[in-house]
Length: 290
Image (cartoon, rainbow, N blue to C red):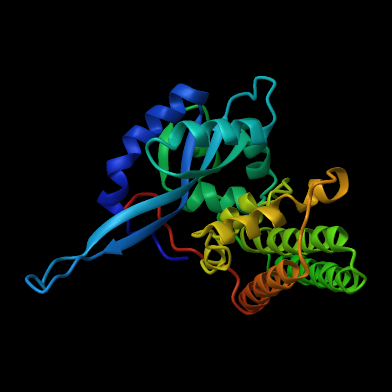
């Protein structure tokens, strides 16, 4: 794992984001898990030597809360992300602090990697860092391989089911199977690559989480045009709407296009699996920005 190099670019947003999250959720800790940095350069016939300007477009945070106040995790995630949107697009993983501490004590790889290597944006001092300083984060290569193999197998079976339903003109069921194929692949990618189990059916959120492991994922569903957005929404809504809403409609052509995109997700998972088997993740110590 490479160390973060976003440095001063992220510092511009760090204080504002921290203030918004503290006001919204009163967290115990905030960790930076990842960020997207673009380099913009404008050239003209009058000025070919314009410097590159780095620009932060989004980030992924882990937020530990002292209590959930009757809300489920996804409600906190949506609330925090909505409040942060005025500063920067943010993807959040929210956990109760007690859960994270239990994971540390149980040597869950996700918690250990975060604790040892993720930059800390905010620390209320609730967790005594000295209690967990000695343990080193390790990657369970055998377990990651098992999760990868099982996830890819399930994803392929759902894809085969989607193709069968499409040929039988059962378009709603085909769309549901495509959703399940994407969900299984993305869950396996995230679990094998980070040790984190995402309890969500949202393809949008799974794609954002999965980008922590595979940077290629956002390119599969760019969502730049209205057609792109419609196609993605058909997949996103397929888990519920195909079963419970009569107005869900999807064409044979749209199913074929989505099938191609799901196959691409499978390819990303398959390629990542080679890394899980041959070279388990071994990040370098990095607790501060460079």
